[in-house]
Each structure stands twice: as C-alpha cells, then as structure tokens.
Length: 62
Image (cartoon, helix red, strand yellow):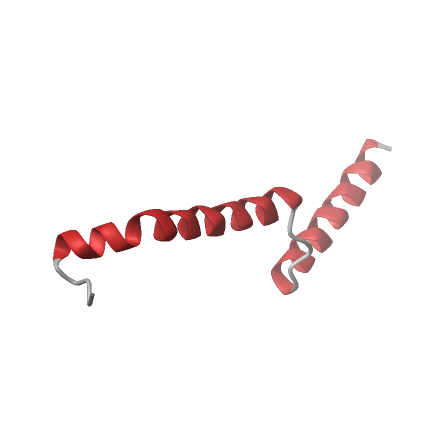
C-alpha cells in the first residue's frame, strides 16, 4: 500500500511541475499589493523629490 501512495504522489508532483512550466497558475494577493505599493512609493518620491534633485544637479529647465 505504501508503494501505491508514493507512486500517486509522484504522479501528482510530475503533473504539477508540468503545469507550472507551461502556464502561470496564479499571482498571489501579496504580489499584487507589493506591486501597487512599489508604484506608489516611486510616485511619491517623484512628487516630493524630483524637482529639488533636478535643481541641485542643474538639470531644471525653469
């Protein structure tokens, strides 16, 4: 009986690896939240610091 169970687990694992290699199965909620958070952090930095940094480096066109 243990031999049959092990074979079944190997079959499931084999199909899992096959599906993971062929298609993207899903994106987790944590991944989506982190992508939005990084985008908001970059937007906040640009909003607060871009003009002063351009002014300091002499690249401001005004």
